[in-house]
Length: 460
Image (cartoon, rainbow, N blue to C red; front, side):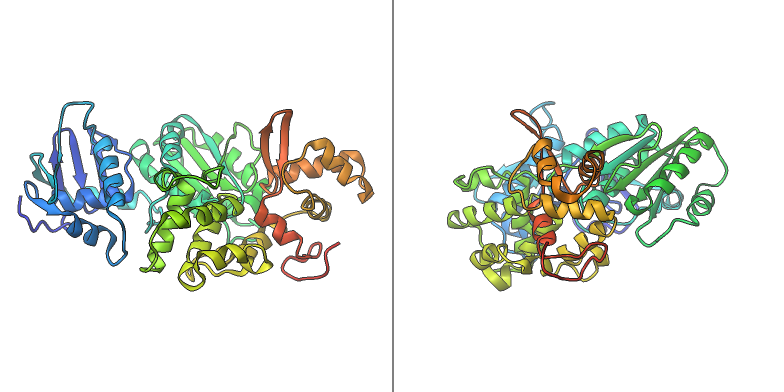
């Protein structure tokens, strides 16, 4: 194979039991996709372009991370992940060699195979999934679980609060699961305010029943939960080979629905954690990656670990909140950033300009969620936000006792807030416990008026 392989051409690179599609950035073992992170895949692409050569670590880092300054430990971590994905150490095969003080090389035998242009055209026509420009951090196990579960489950809903990464996870999982489906359809409902034309849109998208396995990804269903539930039940009866993956801040409560609640990214529970251990936690990894993307001066040191852990903990492990906070490091620094979390201004920290309006800052995210609540649910959330830490259902009822709501209404409000991902449900020593996320507490205690998200009045 030429050292100057053009990865834009329609080629397949085959080695051992594996086939690598550089144009599609896809690695298969036989006919099954290999679960591998985007950085590890980038490294494979660099190494396999020059098989038999030893490539210096600096060259690999420059091609994979660009101008971002990273430490060598990052390269070693992703090399180890790539080796695990290729089965090194389990099957006896060896593909990546490490020459001390020099670098890494691909030592497998690589064949270049031609791919039919018609095949790629056909695949493109059978999927309208958005192209994701960034990989996910800390969600590899969930992606694997979804890829296994989707062909076996006719309706699965990913549920979680705003900013938890439901859309990104669903798109990555649907893309990985495409080998199980003849057609994959994507529909974003966030710009559909009332769902009046939803049935017509879905009928036009899916067409007549064909009996071919089809995956439908319905994104951002929370404001149309009832309409979506009705439409999905109708479609599942009409199309016996249809599978639906939905994302929502609350379950659809449709017949046959399986619910997967998306957990926060894990952060160390203790502030005093060694650097090598802290960097293994997904929340810390995400913060460090995003901080390095916006600030070349950012260097991860032992003295910074405690501040990073504190930030990740106080942002509840919510990926969007961590990403937005990390993007401020170049301007504020870690100490001032941590201090900002004590004020209401952290809700206004800007995210990506190209993000949907409801995700351009945390306040916009909670405006969207708060606006979906009934007046009684809004009132209950504001009162429960005064409880710090976890609390029992009895404690919640006591706090809400003077709201003039009947006991049944109070119980329903607490249940709905939990369903809508504005109360975290945790398994405590004495049973189930509830907690208002720190970011949600900061939002409602600012004095957001009932049924008028975004305005500010004195808190009740």
